[in-house]
Length: 301
Figure (cartoon, rainbow, N blue to C red):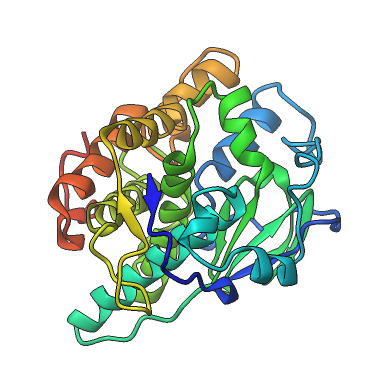
């Protein structure tokens, strides 16, 4: 994945709250759980894992990595910075995702409302309550914000065995912004709190995966505020790395590998590994949000 060296970044879309936080846990439910939040909470607390209140990530970020919001603005100026600094790459990805959805909403005769992403470490206050890292990346519909403890990306590699990489992170971020789109469209309101292989929760998560794929399809052609795309190339290896993540955060994979070895379909809330791969690739290959109607699909894969 490469960024245009000369295109300006907009750091106003990212708030950096790293450097400490508060205790507690974000209120579960409300149509805005993160990519693995409920799964991890259920697996570790209900299937014999870590006791409640213990975060998934306890280590600090790498030396020199945490920066303040003002530092982001000074360090992340153009795509050249995104090509060399992970934080700046995340800013560029967020800029691209929001630029795509702003254009898509405009084409549909509507207006997209931007959502901030907050980077945090350990714990953070949100409109949905206080959250610790055990929730994983999540979207809060109450304040329309995306929240990411960046140590989660290390967890993907160390705990889940994912390959990782910049585009693997892009998939996670695009998925969370998929939840923002669902919130703006009112789709989240159609989902109850039930679980199971055909539940509304599963359909919501698979649709967010598909929306992430739709953005990926358009990422290299979506113009930034400067009129030029921020992202110049996405390789097949990038797509493979995103698929690798999708497979490792499926309900069945997590229950079998992180939850004691038994798969309980009645507790499915995000979809199986195969389903998550299928719907992400449906978005990548189709490139149209209308092809992400998981709620109307009889066969989720």
